[in-house]
Image 1 (tube, one colour):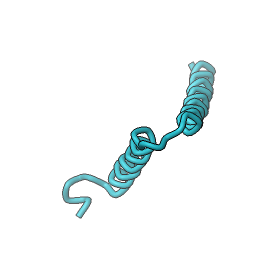
Image 2 (cartoon, helix red, strand yellow):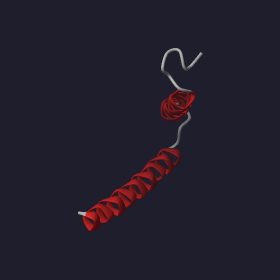
Image 3 (spheres, helix red, strand yellow):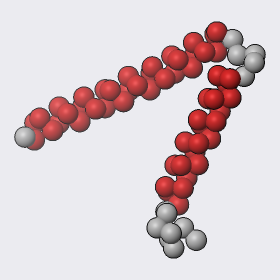
Length: 68
């Protein structure tokens, strides 16, 4: 089923999970009873993720500089 369309299961799973996560976040943000505290916690979570991604990018850049 997935191989005929050149759409692998991994790609399908990642797309599905990304859509699910986006839907949950949108539901929390749009939800009528969302408090400022919840918004703050979501924001802090995104900040932590971005910080980790930034650290990993810096690590990769440092390793590339050593190679070059």
